[in-house]
Image (cartoon, rainbow, N blue to C red; front, side, top):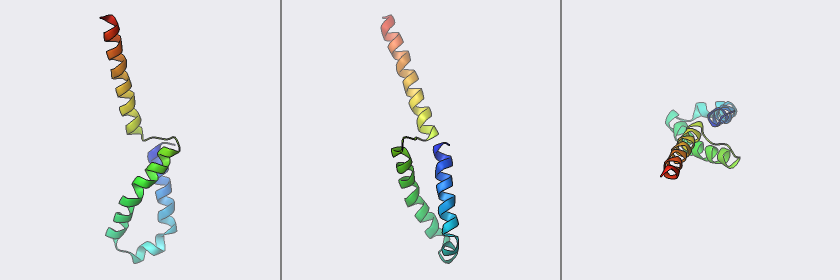
Length: 76
């Protein structure tokens, strides 16, 4: 399960549990809460050893670029 799927699963569980409560709250308040909670959930997930797919792709690209630079330096 990638990071986004895990975040969405946690989000859906929280939304399900707070469904009746959320009907009493304005939508913009729910969106504000989501903005504040989402980064913290992602941080917890990263502390568990998982990273976002986009972060993985960026790291993979950086590693590839570094490997190419090393090969070029070794040729010289």
